[in-house]
Amino acid sequence: MSIAFPRAISMFEADSTETTMIESPCVKICTLDAGSGLCLGCGRTIDEIARWSAMGAAERARVMADLPTRLAARTQPISAAG
Image (tube, rainbow, N blue to C red; front, side):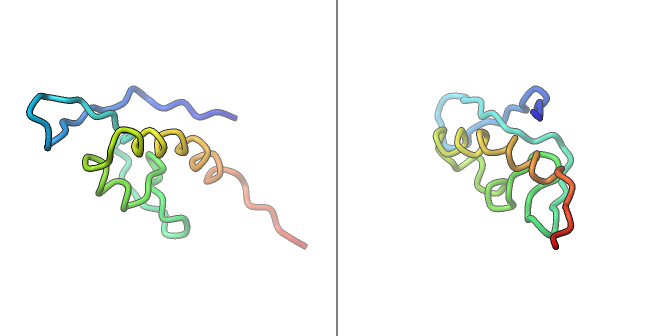
């Protein structure tokens, strides 16, 4: 199963002298799941959301690469053990 993200929303990097666009996975469904601690819309943690514009490009890319797996795991049915 694959999850397709809608077109990324751009943000401006605050610490740059020239305007730099920062890709964001935000889909404006900002609700945190109490069990996993992940946003139900984008799959990021509250810490990742808060630090997003301060993260370097490599760290944001790593998080972006993890999001489809996080969201897919969240949507998998929970099977009863035993």
